[in-house]
Image 1 (cartoon, rainbow, N blue to C red):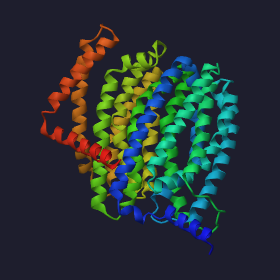
Image 2 (image 1 turned 60 degrees about the horizontal axis):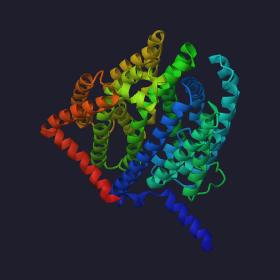
Image 3 (image 1 turned 135 degrees about the horizontal axis):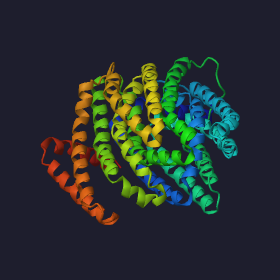
Amino acid sequence: MTPIAEKVLLDRTELFETEHLKADLKGRSIRGGAATVLGQGASFVIQTGATVVLARLLTPQDYGMIAMITAVTGFVTLFKDLGLSMATVQTDTITHEQVSTLFWVNVALSAVVMLVAMALAPAIAWFYGEPKLLPLTLVMAVGFIFGGLCVQHSALLRRQMRFGSLALIDILQLAVSAVVGIGTALAGAGVWALVYMTLSGSLFNAVAVWVASPWWPGLPVRHANVRGMLAFGANLTGFNALNYFARNLDSILIGRVWGGAALGFYTKAYGLLLLPLQRITAPVRAVAIPTLSRLQSEPERYRRYFLRAVNSVAVVTVPIVCILGVFAPQLIDILLGPQWSSVAVIFRVLAAAAIIEPVTEGAYWLLISTGQTRRLLYWRLITVPLLALSFLLGLPWGALGVATMYTACSLLLFLPCLAYGSKHSPVRVTSFLAAIHRPFIWGGALLGAGFLGSAAARGIGIWPSFGSFAAMTGVGTVILLRWPQARGEIGDCLGILQELRCAR
């Protein structure tokens, strides 16, 4: 064997093996979390800045038209992955031949998805009664092929816990798309600015991931023993498809019955609320699932790691959602401008559902990391009809009615979801609840203090109300810190932050 061939074989071995990661799993997890948290922070700043600028350059109708398209075509794009990226991350052992075969499966699926999305373009324009959607859909469909080309490369980076590279790619992708979107909007492109922004980001991500990953696919192998991985991916894709349907049926119904402007308000409220939450939960999810997958054979370490991760998510996200919910009217006015004032009340209603969503996601981590994707699929088969019914019940009252019924349904499903996800895992539902109950009490205290501050500042203007709100929230926090258990909870989170800082 030539030296070059030996080096290629060695590189492949290092890319697919994970045994060497276990020797320093905690350190890699901490360093990966640090890199991802920093990356998500930078991404949040970029995305928020782009949102603030574009909200003043574009209209709710523009955002509504893009939401109409993505609510339908986004469902089709789920099948370009087929859950095979997570299969590559979760599987204990994998080979070059298997990943190569999965790569070509993803490429073929993404090409089919692109063609299907293009074929759906006339139907989408007809369904919403908006002819402009036809060319918009055709152009946006081109971007789907880029995603299929980088599925396995991204999965290999996550499998090797190279979260720093992934964080850098995410930052640069958002920066490129923001520059393109704002530049074309300033040039008068209108709704097309959002299309150009999406395409440029997808193209940059595909190129950057190939550059970051040294792996080059070979030809597909017929007997590569990927049947088990395909089954894992098929169940996960079924869950994602049902999950997507549950999360987007509301947008489809609002757009069809109430039009683009109403949908623009609804999606902007939903997007603004999820933006900070996703930037917080994404780093934990990106590190937690690969780490938990490596710990399947060590139940006690698995349990401790999971409970600490889900506790950290709750301690950070619950207070943030409470504060955003209280201060929604002023926040919307400052960030988006007066033309978006109708977003505030929808934002507040959805906040009640958003406060539990990051914790609910923890139940899905348990099922995915232990390979229970079939049970994950069964859960969505149960919940999707309930969510669909809630949307239909709220639809006569417009976007606010849909948001209200969605929130009510989400709250009712919260405890059953935690119990279902914990079953057949090293984590008991009682431990799950014990890990999150104090953050919710803390959030409730901040919520009460925030509403008192907001009421005291009513009628004195936006900026003075900031000071009053901050003062009352600070008083509530000081009172809370007198509670020893709460101090211990906060201290644990600060300990995690200290570990992240020391690991950099």
